[in-house]
Each structure stands twice: as structure tokens, then as C-alpha cells.
Length: 196
Image (tube, rainbow, N blue to C red):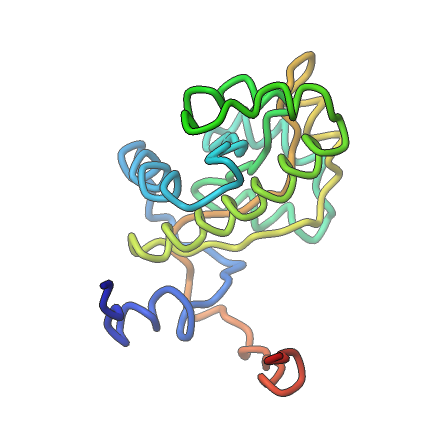
């Protein structure tokens, strides 16, 4: 049986973690980005499909391609962040299902049902994006997911003529704690949960 992780780990990943909008100039290495993926890939997805695809935008040229898709309020944050991850999904994720889920070949199920594969790709890539944030925090990085951008513009700039589609973006790096806003409250258990 698994044992609970330490309170310090819970704090680092959840209760004391913050979404940062300002960043230090400390870089994020290629090895750190690989480590992020190597952790997040183990999070569960439907039939182990793993539909998420990631583009780590680090270069000035890559950022220039991303700026026109952003809401004005997000441009400065993306400019300052060492990395902005485009969390995307592959519309043809099912091409890998036979290998990833050998217990049952669900390829035909997804190939023959456009609505099912779109819902599966979006839902599961969203979960995988959350795993990315958890992995980043576990590795000592900060993250700020955002949806303040135009998906169609991101797809045109980064995924033209391909099968990948953007879900959301997330800045990554080492946040500047001196520029954090006061922490927002959360709803109480009684307000949002039912036990039946």
C-alpha cells in the first residue's frame, strides 16, 4: 500500500504553491524539460492514450510567433518567462493506442468516432497539462497556466498542416516571489462537494 507523501511535499505541489506572473532570469534547462515529461507521462489517461503533445517555447523566435496569439495582458509574462509550454493534443493520438494499451486495441473505436476522439483528446490532454504543472512544482519550478490566447492563431503558427491542436499554454520557470499578488481564497468543501 502507498504511504502519504510528506506535508512539505504537499505544500510544495499544492497548498503553498502559487501561479507566478513575474519571473526571475534563471533559465530552465533542456534536461529539466525532459525531466518534466518523464514524470508527467506516468499520469493516467483513457486507455493509456497519452494524447498530449508539448511544445516548449524558449527562443526569441518562438516567442515572437506566440505573441500575436496572446491577450495583451499575457504578452509581458510570456516575454519574461524562460519557457512557455504549449499543451496540445494530437488528433490522431489513436494511432499509438495499440502499442500503449496492449490489453485492448481501441484504434477502430476512436478512428470511427470523431466526437469520441475529440472529447478524449481534449479531456486527457487537459489532465496531462495538470500533471505537467504538478511535475514542474515537484521539480522546484513554478508554473502559470493560462487560457488568455487565441487557439486558432497558435495552431496556425505552430501546427500548420499537422494533427496537433493547442489546448492551453503554461509559463514555466522560477517565479519572482516579491511580485506575487495576495493569494485568492478557495471554496469550502461544503460548497462544492457531495458525498452520496
